[in-house]
Image (cartoon, rainbow, N blue to C red; front, side, top):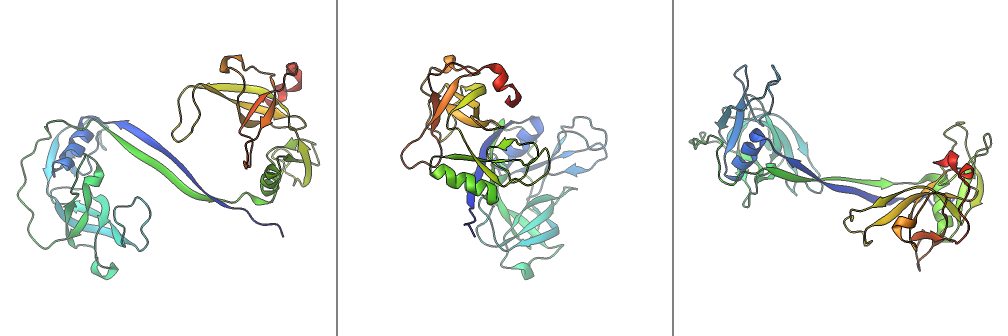
Length: 313
């Protein structure tokens, strides 16, 4: 049986958001060790604060300070914290209704074990030592038996308010390519490109999928395609990607390899970006030890006729 390939992959990007007056006051307050909610039209104090009334949908700005102490309304034990979570040791995810609030705030509760946590237990905020105006300014909650502390009287007016936040969106997963794409990847290791032909419509899929998405039948006939191909369409990239050592502008294109019924992606090099065009004939350029082409360059052949690739745009 052939080796089953798998690889850990990460998709990550920074998400930048500007803040309105309510969220700005809430996050700036956390930086100053103050918790602010907002009063809705029905009199409830919402924490975290909403920007629009959940009953009337109107904008609300009546900020209300609440205490940094509260009561656990429900919880779940996290025995194996993951990367980026508030604590590195086991903890409880808890919904905490702060004193003075009518809704609950989700955050981590630091406790020695699940037996030490119960609905109705009293807790307080443990503030982060360094605070920047983010929800992480609350390091976690911790058990607390005392009385709620005196409120500061904050109204939401702060010097140097937080006006925007940047949050990293990240997805970690393990990719297993399956039989068809394993053969495709192994062939790339030998600088060959292999697709699979549908036994019904005879279309050659590159990369292969193991089945024809049009006919719904399995594909197992391997077909070597390329190495040359035709640019079917392209875009000019003007924004430099993080951790990608390619100077902008550069061209990223759909390339229909000779013999393939589907275009794949590739970067175009060896030609000024403003000279790349539909129909340009290209060939792969490999670097030492690479498992896939670094980029494609012009072959010097005449451009392909539009009718030869128009079905693969």
